[in-house]
Length: 352
Image 1: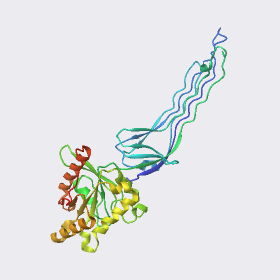
Image 2 (image 1 turned 135 degrees about the vertical axis):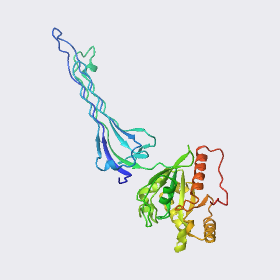
Image 3 (image 1 turned 60 degrees about the vertical axis):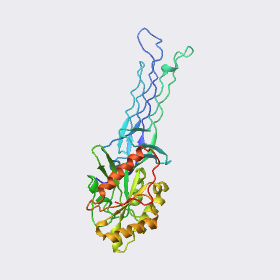
């Protein structure tokens, strides 16, 4: 299924039914009085989270959603039927904006959560409500009001505990395929990942977390270059970022330090909050280097960047160091969920 994480739709709530003008007509009761009933309220439009959905692709073909109109009132004090509400299913993690004002209407982050996006019109009153001692035969009624009409912009942001960021071919897809049951496309050319992939990492019988593989970023991603601008937003919900670096690229003349700075620059351009998010350095493909060259390069990276957060050396393709990394991540997520004291990372980061 093609991944779609943005969609624009139009929602129209139903009109309220008009009140009825009617008088009681029965044999031998010449002055029966008013008996016009009220109309029914118009139907409303709701959005509801469906965990079975992971894309907004359904809205590519259907963009207009109308709720039912309320029925008008009737004689003999009969009220009109309420218009039928409609519920639109959306994926978990959907942000809902008013497309005309850019106002954030709601953030759907819980399973089964419902959000009212268009209120149905109010019913009109029948003439029975206008009877008084001085007005025994009222001919006044009110009309039902129009329902709300809105143009909505839906943006889906994946909900994950950990997000992977880095240049194309850094090994993000390989890592998520090794530590979870996710099976993203893996190949030796850039942009094999065209949409976010989610994987559940189980570290113990009852402990797990969700990790997201985001398409690779390139320089200028925050301005729209490559695929990055479409997916940088998915990193904003994560609690921890893993910055994946192809350490072996140094063998072919690339500078891992510059590669790291490119990603940092794009994160900062997109959002200062994203740049300030806790980020660990994961140096991948260490199995392709001699041990002494690898260790020297790792120390140079830490020293030149003045890196104080944790640093891990792994080989995603062989799985070396991945298990330890996953356990460290789970420990850190537990600390974030149940903070006991301020965490201070060691000046000489742990390398695994």
